[in-house]
Image 1: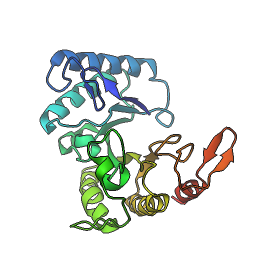
Image 2 (image 1 turned 30 degrees about the vertical axis):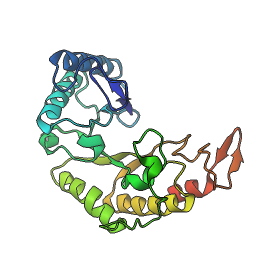
Image 3 (image 1 turned 90 degrees about the vertical axis):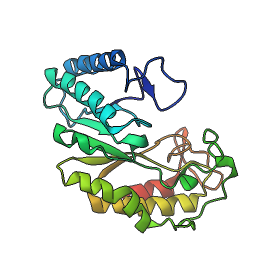
Length: 242
């Protein structure tokens, strides 16, 4: 799945871009030119081996501006590769589906990082995360976060998008290595059950690293040595069940 994390005019991570992809036509034209090139280069590769995911996690952009850029890019891709599987992330970091694009014959991608008080506990790049209380699961907030609330907040609205003929998948999910391991696994199981029931595919962020099942450097995991890596066997076995 080929994706721009940093596109001309937009990136979810700092530093910012000189142009604004959502408001500067120059940036949108450059972005479309990149995708037009990839479409021509890879048009003979089957969708089973290659898909295009346009840009990672558009954040604070209104639906009309986002849809305008996506439509331009999809048109550019289909000039050379009309059958390519194309995926657009939902807005607000993948949380909100874009119903305006339902007529485009493209899929949309959501995320699984709810609640952030659990998934990003002690994450150094998130303001105030080092001051959050150690999470448990379910998370005893008002309202309480449990599997039923995950379904209501993060699954049901995307199932409505599916009724319009739009394919949905979960492009990223995971929990930072400071969250207790047993809490992480319990939370993951609830999400994975929801996605299995919804019929959605998913991708773990990340395979190797602080959110992953290899070399995550959690302090509370009895790792299994796998070559040069440290394997979180319990997480792997959980994922294999889904």
